[in-house]
Amino acid sequence: MSRGVALAGVLALSVTWTTAVVQVSPEPEQKDARPVALPISDQPPDRPASTSVPARLGYKAASRGRVRGVSSAPTDDIPSAALAAYQRAEAVINLADKSCKLPWQLLAAVGRVESNHGRTGGNLVDADGISRPGVRGPRLDGTHGTARISDTDAGRVDDDPAFDRAVGPMQIIPSTWTEIAVDADGDGRRNPQDVDDAALAAAVYLCSGPDDLSTRDGLRRSVLRYNRSQEYVDLVLSIMAGYQDGDYAEAPNSVTPSMTLSADDHAGPVERSSPEDRAHNFSHGDSGPAQPTQPAPDHPDESPDSPQDPPPTEHEPLARVKKKVEETTTAAAHTVTGVLSIAQATTACAAAGLNALLMPRTWRECIDRHTR
Image (tube, rainbow, N blue to C red; front, side, top):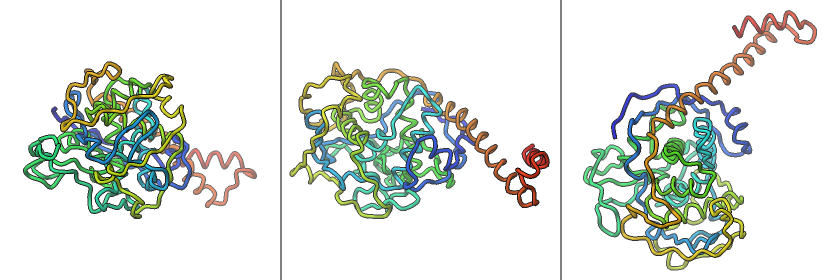
């Protein structure tokens, strides 16, 4: 996959504007979204973003609406910084590509499965959304049920010069990260350990195809591109449905989670029953019980042939999504800039001793002078 010229000034949304768009409460810590440079690829993604195997993560999808290994709150808590990152990524990607209709709960479900929102392995998510000391998956050397991926990044992304390791809260493999890496929070870095960058990068990947993620088939195809395991898809969508039902709690940043799942948790699974309609968003109203999924193979399915879950199809290049991100968010930035200019002009005119009620004409002239 070739890498083209970076687009500058892709993302410039104010905290107020983003909060209004996604209609979130003020509690999650929001950060200004600075200009973002997104790499352009002229080819569709030819590799998954993640190679995680659910059985190795300690999860198992049971019947529809039931997930073993994931208990009720406070276990299903989401750090404030991660929650804000998921919601902001939803707002940005859906403005850029209105046909995608990605829900933030999907990103949250991926983050939950992959790393418990950046907190697996003793990591904590700080107020800036960075997992510390850093989430790195197992060495992908083909042993212990892992895929075999020789080093593709000279260790620059994953600190392993021999084999690749998935990195960050969304556990993206280095070869894919180099194609979708973004600086979503304007700190001057494209950091896979930063949930802001990782969540928006995952959103770009999930929306890189032609799928409508408000439909069951669209969701499944998109997630199956992200990780080519049917069991992974079932698990992510089950957790997503729970989040859509409000089955989560916001947690403070830099706090150890009540439970971080690992393979050991599979020995004593916890089942949580969900409302019957929990799977409605991706089942087309099929209320019959689903059969338990089979244990995941040692390697992710490269050619899934489940009749109800069509395999990933050829889709438009990542450049399609990135171009729309540039166009849409640049237009939004102009709107925000105008609002800020008016606010600044109002302050200047008031400081000059003018009053909009007593001197309406003079007030308008003053505002016009400052906003031309």
